[in-house]
Image (cartoon, rainbow, N blue to C red; front, side, top):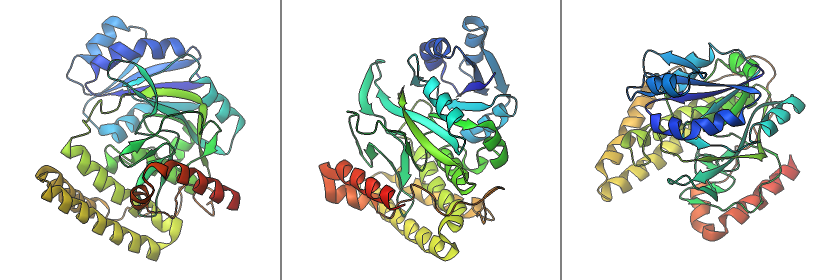
Amino acid sequence: MKTAVVILNRNTREYLERWLPGLVSSCRDAEVIVADNASDDGSLEMLAAEFPDIRTISLDDNYGFTGGYNRALARVNAEYYVLINSDVRVNDGWLEPLVDWMDNHEECGICGPKLHRLMPDGTCSDSFEYAGAAGGLIDRFGYPYCRGRVPGRTEKDYGQYDKPREVMWVSGACLMTRSSLWERLGGLEEGFFAHMEEIDYCWRAQLAGYRVNVVPQSTVWHLGGGTLSRSSAFKLKLNYRNNLLLLDRNLPATTGPSIAARRIRIRKFLDLCSATVYLLCGRTSYFKGVLEAHREFKTISTGSRQTAAAGGRMRGTVYGYTDICIILQTIIRRKRIFEYLRKYEDYHRRCR
């Protein structure tokens, strides 16, 4: 099979029952596979009873998003892999634009659709979803944001991002990659466990000479928070820790070691400012989460820095690593932030 669409499941039986039938019916020319990260909610039993024709890969432990996909895709043979969450709803025709784009753009190693918000009742919203919106970027201090999403705010989709564009990253909620690139880069970095691992993967792909594109002719709807709640202190810790790990792994190859070290120091200071705010607001679990994230980063980051891409040619620049401070700009621009970012993006695209 040319394309394999792989769901990594961890105790999301309800989502599989609800959204898997639509995914299967939409993938007429692709194989749908469910890889299970040692669920204990009866997911595998349900799949065997209700979806006997779906191939399942049963893992013996919870290896997280990174380790789970690395182990599952090692057993899959296809030209293109699609990583997709169990809490994603698709409509007919979502997959073909992604396959067509990869077929016709050999310089592209990774692509993804627009992500819209899926409401808890299953309603498909016309607002962008926080996880990936219309393609992701990163500011100078490593804060991820998206075309259509900035910290604490999302935009409605009225066609403003309907042209395919190169971006820094696309969300792991729905991401297509060439299997050859996956093998060359060694899959996802398992030290991340979950969260921001797809940004690291996309960044490394660019360093290896490939492009990352959002293909807005494809749209999917993402519920979000299916495995870890948005209010989870563990999730917050992963985000802070992995954001530092992301910079430590990739900035030296992008900006040079001295600039990388300086920006990581500034980012650590900004993290501690956030931790102080959490403490003053009585969110002690969040405060502890930030401190724990920094402790874990110090351990995990040892020897992790990239000095070159994994084989192949190096690109002169990495698209989507911007020179702004997104948090400051969001505060200053307020409701005009998205208009500002579109003008900023267009200007820098013309200057490339």
